[in-house]
Amino acid sequence: MTFQLFNSEDAACRGHNPAIWFEKGAAGVARSICNRCRCRVECLEFAIRNGETYGIWGGMSTWERRREVALRRSSGKLHDSEHEPPMIGLTSPSPELNSIPA
Image 1 (tube, rainbow, N blue to C red):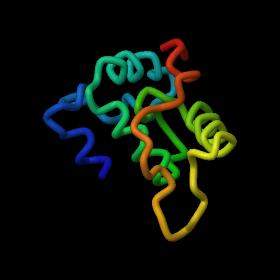
Image 2 (image 1 turned 45 degrees about the horizontal axis):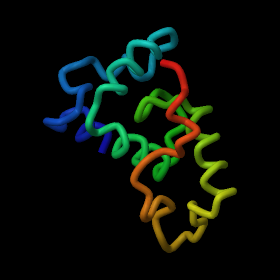
Image 3 (image 1 turned 180 degrees about the vertical axis):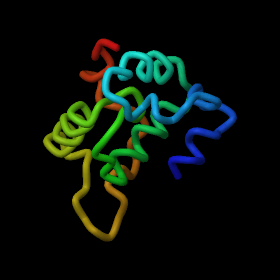
């Protein structure tokens, strides 16, 4: 799926070196690309659903994604059932995280 995200026609990251999203010190560049991307929510949901533990996904760092998961759990928007994907019905990050600086 990672390869598909980076190659989606609508993805702002298309054509960029994927290493940008995983290199120390390159988070600002990755976030600036993510912030203008139509696939940002899809990318973030993929990372949360699959437990991605490294890199910038949907404009969020590992720590920010962990915080997002905690917010969703506390609000009842995250299901812990092993029989259903955890992000069913969610279409965007919590509003609180929209103000995270790039």
